[in-house]
Length: 187
Image 1: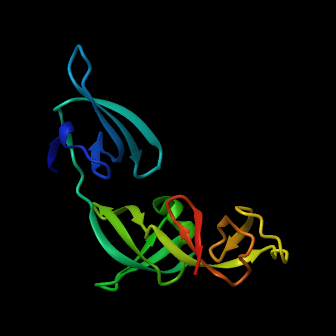
Image 2: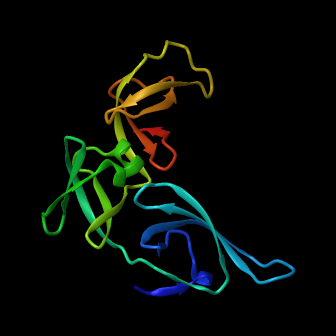
């Protein structure tokens, strides 16, 4: 595996530290008045999702993990696992909910995701920044009740509950930001 220095760290780079894969979430180069420079990082464990704060001396070598990424289409849920199909080879792969993380809240059949693997192990699933989903249930908005900024809970077709404006009704399609889980607009 290629080794890089801590000066080359960027958000999204995957590192292999003590045979555990971490993605760089944040990094900051610090140059104090006295002493050597160092790099303060916030890392996410790709297997467990736990966050780790770690400080490295500037310029030391760290091992970069190379991930293979490919487009895969979500087919269906098989018990607890999610079944994806490689859009190029038509191979099917079962993925555990742990590898999906929050992406599971936004997956509908035939949705395409980017699956990252390392040594044939699925380590992450990337979905688009926003998705369009249908409202499965919400309380009806009252006629004339148009308080600016007022929100009500709504259940998406995937089971995820989000806050939507009062004018959104059952059956409406809405755009949802998958990074924050917030309503963007009605489609």
